Image 1 (cartoon, rainbow, N blue to C red):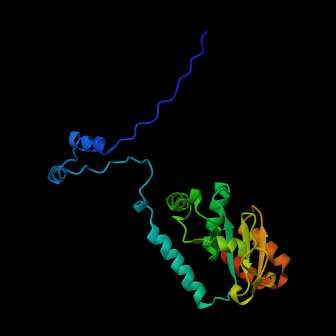
Image 2 (cartoon, one colour; image 1 turned 45 degrees about the horizontal axis):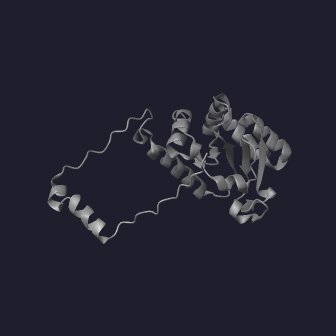
Length: 216
């Protein structure tokens, strides 16, 4: 067998004559011809998801505004926050929503479901549509109260902004004297009883909240 060597051909780069020939052979369409063409219609994309307009964002915003107005009247008043995730079993979420609506507690989410406002609202709406309950998305609150499990029940005792220090959580954290927390998949009344047992000075506040919770 006689070996053969194939030499690579050097690339042919177009010169000025080649480019002139290409422009003459395939001229660019005149502006009048381009303007005479009708614009294409935007494609119609079918989706099996409910349109965002059907989600009552205004009602959710009103709930947040109502909560803000309540806390603005007496910002240092004790208040219950229930830190949740949408991964909590549905029965537990429904129970917490119903109990939060009775006591005025706020449901706190860390962030959006799948980084989507649409998916978050679609998941929350069936839970709260029949209950006047406030809920917020507040990742900083999880750090402020060192929340690592859900659900976690936090009873704030004084205005956190007046009693905070720099803690290892990487943000301004509430001091241990400004709140009491209990974590676990339990009911709100069980959590309140545990809070009162953990810090007896909260007994009057807990008693008032339990009274509202247990009203028929």
